[in-house]
Every structure is written in structure tokens, then in C-alpha cells.
Image (cartoon, rainbow, N blue to C red; front, side):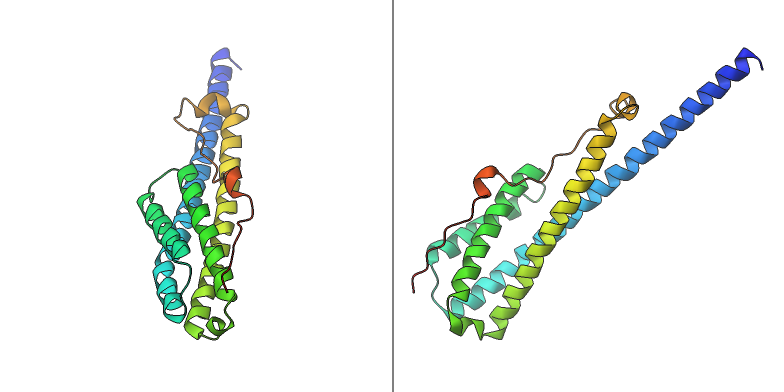
Length: 187
């Protein structure tokens, strides 16, 4: 075999390796973006459920106006951050989740409300949506971990930057929001 043939074979192998790495990075990047869109879909669903739930609950009882105002404010902030970063969205969405949890506790404190099928249905849907949001967040973070690992390990790390691939942020809960919220009920 001539030296030219050996060089062409080596270049061919390197080219195939680069193509494989590039395609692998593109596939994983697309999965991360798909996972982020799944989170956004679930957040939008929750966003749309909140007004109906609040109207139903308000019609049934007189709840803490401060809590309802807080939920309305947080819902508005969440809507404003539709294209925000995962860190920004996580902070606002987690605060909204905490406020909705406090609302759920207040609703459960009133036995008469539980008998309202409309409220029970909304609370069920909201709980289901919250579960889906958490599952979507875990899936997204797993995909971010996989992608970020791919662009950091050898030999992909040598070419990922040159190919324009950058790491993604995790959807994290700020430490201040990891504490259990205190809910005081006035009965």
C-alpha cells in the first residue's frame, strides 16, 4: 500500500468519525429542544387551567385574597417568561407551583368544596398537570445531562465547539424554593 492510500484511508476514517459525532450531537440537541417544548406545553396547560380553577373556588368559598392575588401575579409573570431561559422559568414556575399547592391545601380544608365536582375535576387536572411538569422537567434535565456530557468528553469536545454546539442550562429549583411552604389556614 502506498503512503497516499494510507493517508486517504486515515482521512476517510476521520471524516466518518466527524460525521458520526456531528449527527450524534444534532440528534441529542434536538431531543433536548423537544424535551424543553414538552415542559412548555405542560406549563401552558397549567397556565390555562388556573383561571377556571380560581373562578370555581372563589364561587364556592371566600379564600385568602392574598393567595389568590399571588397566584394571579405569578401566572402573569409565567406568561411573560414564555421564551425565557430554563433558570428564569424554573424560578417563576416553581413559585407558582408552591402557591397552587397552598391553594390546594386551603381547598382541602373545606369539606364542602370537595363535594363540588367541578372543583374536584380542576384540582385533579391541576395535580395531573403538575405531575406531568415534574416528569417533563426530569426528562429535560436528563437530556441536557446527556448532551452536555457529549460535548465535554473526548474526542467530541475537540470538535463540538468548532461545530457551534454549546451546553444547555438545567431546569433547576432554586435552593430558597426547596423548602416546604408554610400554609396557615383561617377556619
